[in-house]
Image 1 (cartoon, rainbow, N blue to C red):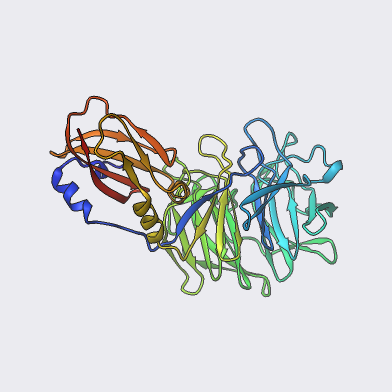
Image 2 (cartoon, rainbow, N blue to C red):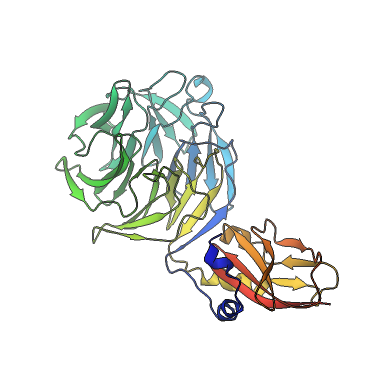
Length: 410
């Protein structure tokens, strides 16, 4: 917790009693964890109202299993693993994917064989995998995929000879690949790619140094144009999703040699980046992102361990409603306190804030008790050796003041 949030002067306490802050940059909410093993370098995509996550590496083995997320019920359901019953040996991480209609396409990646070029089609309507024509470029990992004009594209990545900046298009009707205009940035691995309208965008990544440059691809003219440099620090292994005409790019591993949790919005109309609310999960790289309707989703990844949590970003939430829900529901009882007490608040707040802390001060503003993170909506508060008197408390969630008040010990 940042030091300025633990200021122990009484004047500061008096000031914050009357201060409430909220973000106008959207809000993150935690949802049901992915129902397979925690993993990194998986792939994620959406078809209709379902969000699909699969493949990846779980710190022990490469994976080929998949599950689909239902946003209505907030539940995950296992589906057929990549390749179906005959898919043994198809486990991998750092694969690439794109979606055309109600079918997803997965290519390349890495498993016990260093690099792959096999290419698979998944029919979400029938839950069936079908092998298609192998990727026509070199076997590789850490490339990106996108869709334009009813065709799929794969760009960049890393093969047995090094880093790549080639671009390949897949024609579904012909079941064939063709080479397209080379990505104009340096050859690289682990960039991000997204599509807005009739243009695709590729940027960030690693070419031996961390990258923040971005380029726009027009499939009609088979040409690339330079666009605004990413608003955050240069990085690789970031994730992204698109809502309307805006793309959201964040997390990843950057030039501070650490995983990140900042997120930035790209406005394709103004060709500009602006910061939004930080991702509320742990700082991480190699997560997956996808869009369902007007919401963005981020799941899995690596934060020094593989992860399986799922978060949704609502661009229209200011956080005020979540702050008010917490404030109206929080209570400490009994009050006055003779022995011990219970801290209680609405269970939904545990999903609206990634971290809620509790600090207790004596009347002189000295910190006498601190709980760094409340893990449950009901927590026991031990009196310990505190003397009788009036005490002031505050709750902080994601660096925002949630509530303050006083309790009496007698």
